[in-house]
Length: 153
Image (tube, rainbow, N blue to C red; front, side):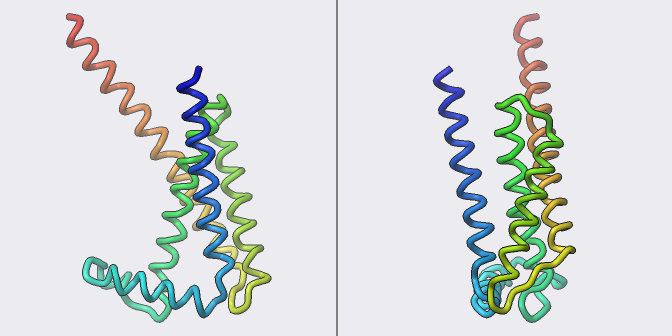
């Protein structure tokens, strides 16, 4: 029981940190956000494929970042909801709501604006995160089951 409670607390903490990161970035004014994207792009330039490294404000790179941070959110949501014995589709709904809040925040930030395409990318990231965690969990259970069978025979 105590192990489960610690896992639950860790999961909630990671979820809060993830949402703070996502929404905190949305609170950055457009100019600051573009400068930060350019800085990250400069760090990644040596390893980026040609398509991702082109573009003024890191256009495609920014979309990949959105997808990735929401995939992490999807993993956190799936982990939490599985501990609470809820269905995976509820994570998609919660992740979609977080994406909508993310875009609504940008309405009030100078130099930023909401985008329906961004909501779609975010929800796709959430779905991918949920899928990856479910797939990894299933794979891990099968591997443990196979190794257990070999030891007992």
